[in-house]
Structure formats: structure tokens, C-alpha cells
Image 1 (cartoon, rainbow, N blue to C red):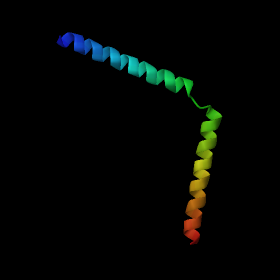
Image 2 (image 1 turned 45 degrees about the horizontal axis):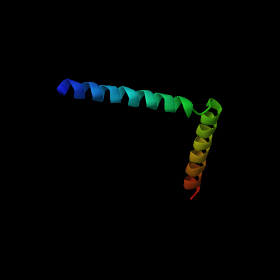
Image 3 (image 1 turned 135 degrees about the vertical axis):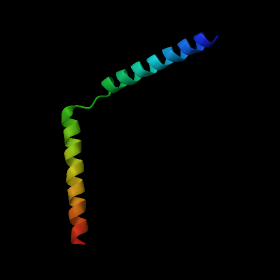
Length: 55
């Protein structure tokens, strides 16, 4: 009985990992979107720091 549960949980783990990988591949953002988001974040952060220094 113990071996059945171990195998069942192992199969569930493998299916969950495969589902996670496939979902990440399907919902993958383009490199341009990632770079734009990073640029926007850094620009926002710099503006916030400058505003705090001026106040």
C-alpha cells in the first residue's frame, strides 16, 4: 500500500512540474516587453528618488 501512494504522489509531482513548465512557455512575455517594463520601473524609481531629495 505504501508503494502505491509513493508512486501516485510522484506521478502527481511530475504532472504538476510539467504543467508549470508548459504554462510558463505559453504565457511567456516577449523580450521587448520585459525590457520595456524594466526600463519603466528604473525610470520611475529614479524619479521617485529625485523627488525625495528635492523635498
